[in-house]
Image 1 (cartoon, rainbow, N blue to C red):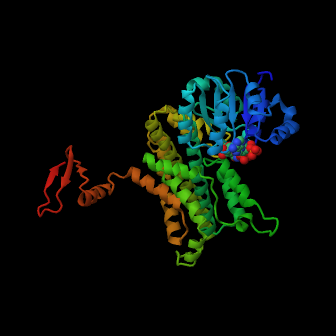
Image 2: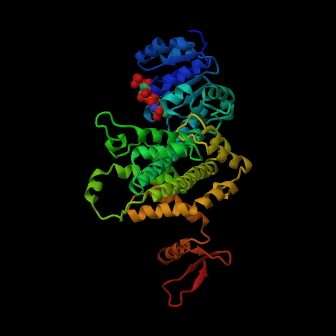
Length: 479
Ligand code: NAP
């Protein structure tokens, strides 16, 4: 077999097939392989005319078809399947070759695999790919980790297949080893928070303001024209406007209210706990999905007393929608900012040099959280690469300041009327935590010192101190 292919793809499921087609459509010769030959044949039969494909029946044929250094993209299930496929191909590759994992691997697995393959002289490049089936074909957001050396070779290819916004590719080298998969994981965590916030906004407009799903679709359409403009707001309007064919009822009323998840939100929260990153909006969104699926618990508690729910007048309802817009925007800024802070924390922990402005830039297209305000997040992190929070940027600070009163009113209305808004509440509490001059953590330190002699620091002089709580005069000593 001629070594003529610029890249090989193994695993021709939904994502692998479409990424292979995307590379071919961009002029690359693509060698394609699947453990069962049927998928390979199906791809060539249906789409072979779209570009230059080389069909490989075996792993050996796939490797033989690749130009050097060989570039091999794995698009298989994360976990043991990925390890098995890596083991199979690593034995056939040579130093300098590159294995690219485009699956949704956990970043810790990517770090482990990168270290093991580096010892063999192979580059292992964990790549976050966002945008689902359509994105893979027409242009995803691509978040590659791995060595700078590997990006020098692979970068132009990733940029070619990625989504473009204002002529710029939605692909950039994120950082060493697992940085790409880490950032993709946080993307998905933010996606959970964004979706939950939108869902809470819908619930408030329905339960507090008394709007119908079709009316709420209109509200979301209007919001999509402004600062909330985003793919998720756009599709929300579409879903809310959809009428179920079988019953003629609003689609949203015939769907079971138990949300599924594949686990990347959970990974984000688990990792955030390890890093000590307070991603509270993401955590609440993840728990909200879990709670929605707790049928037994929900049924045991159904019918418990809730809030009072007097209907709003039409004028009040219109005013309420504008308040919800403020609350949604402010909460969204907090949720995204929490994600960025988590990336900063991980970069410090793992020694990654991550350009936070670039993260915003490559999420403007291709991925699920693409949103117009990412331009502003990018600008904020470009103007100050050490920016600790969007709340410290004058433009965002002014907007959040303007949102203050309506944001608090919306959360208060939800509490009064018994509408659950865990993500709105968490975002507002996070904001209040950050802006507070003093937190009750001082009291926690006192409690910890009382029962565990954990010590504390004082505000008026340096050093570590302990109060001898059991002594009658409670003497303080330096620890
Ligand atoms: P899929 O349609 O189920 O395809 C999985 C592919 O992996 C199939 O070609 C399958 O081969 C192959 N495979 C599974 N186990 C294998 C093994 N032990 N050895 C060799 N090949 C094996 O999955 P997908 O949706 O394309 O997803 C692929 C990866 O991309 C996953 O990690 C997923 O999380 C990630 N991802 C998916 C999306 C999305 O929207 N779907 C988005 C981003 C990332 P057979 O045909 O022989 O079973």
